[in-house]
Amino acid sequence: MTGRPLALVVEDAHDQAALLRRYLDREGFDVFVAHDAESAIAAFAEIDPALVILDLMLPGVSGKACAELIRARFPDCFLVISSVLDATDYPPADAALPKPITGAEVHAVVGRMR
Image 1 (cartoon, rainbow, N blue to C red):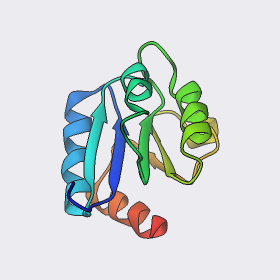
Image 2 (image 1 turned 90 degrees about the vertical axis):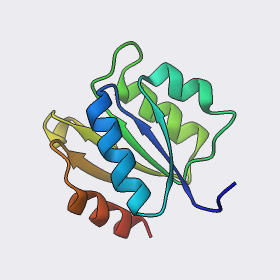
Image 3 (image 1 turned 180 degrees about the vertical axis):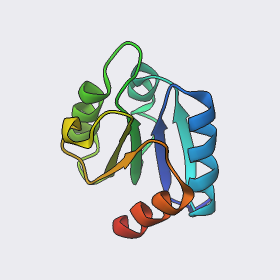
Image 4 (image 1 turned 30 degrees about the horizontal axis):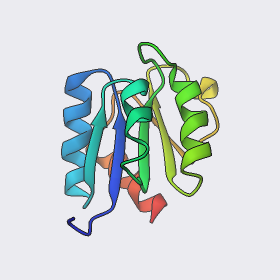
């Protein structure tokens, strides 16, 4: 246990997941990456994220359905939606990170969280 808060990244694109891992590590988070909603849901019993960055366009269970499950399981976590879709199509969340994502945008979102 590092004492750092945990960020859950649910992202099916491996390059985007790696980029988010790097950005969040710099922001002081331990990062758990799930490449689909099912993997994220399966990890719920083992994790307690302070922050979730969730891609909407996932294989299998949709990002919107996963967002609802995250809200139900972790009501106090800071939920961030990430997608190439128009932000008006995002489900309710604490913040949005439209793609492509930059380190400065992640830094700003983390600042809003804190």
